[in-house]
Figure: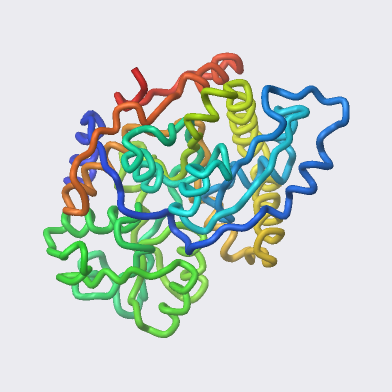
Length: 370
């Protein structure tokens, strides 16, 4: 493990890049957020509009998107936008959110690093910018304790990841490589059987015994624990300062150019939401769970919600250097060729907001616009 961490620390100073193949951890589809009517009702008739009548934001009904869940639920974005109405859509996968951004169905989105990079590279740098951070952590290796009692016992077992090439899949493949084991990335066959499984069905797969464990984000990890699984490794322990990007904020370049004031207002709402979450952790957890219930019809039980919430850290910093490390991992796994990610970040609007609020600015690790 020390050698693994040392390698990762060295990677922090390397400028690397990747177009990860896939999506953030969920299944396909999108839906109109049920909070749209509530947001519309929250717009005062005399509130001053910004340069756009509305802003369309997208996010996942997932605790790693807590900033968006809570910011919408508590009206914190709408407060910053005044008479410019927040319109929301939720997605269950990165590709569908990127498609919505490209089609103009949303303007700003909360999304994982892998689909962000895919969207940027596939458009040859024309579709989006990463404009802020949102969350770090919340990814764990959980296993059947009757079959796997140590990290070395993972060899020869069947371990699920959300999908080929997604953020967790790449992290697990890299960890396997660091152990000195061999796995063919595309097929998942080798010293460990990597079983690509939708997070929605991973708990059933674990219950049936068709997998022995999973490298997954929250709340899937805690759902497995509630079924008797054991946390064998928290991915945060593999990273310098125990931080790595799991969710960031993207914007359509077209919308950013046309409505910079609206983008700044959303970012201000995001920063203030993160502050509110940190100042009111119990209220924020309840708010996020209420949002999940509204979106999915079912709240998370306490034995899943509490440990999942504790392992996720909201952040304004996009942790750009860790995206570079994730890039190296994907290239090393043979899943992609090293692309040019120069310009994927535009942190000027966020840094303007942070400076106005008396907060330290954040860095783009050399991947910013020139």
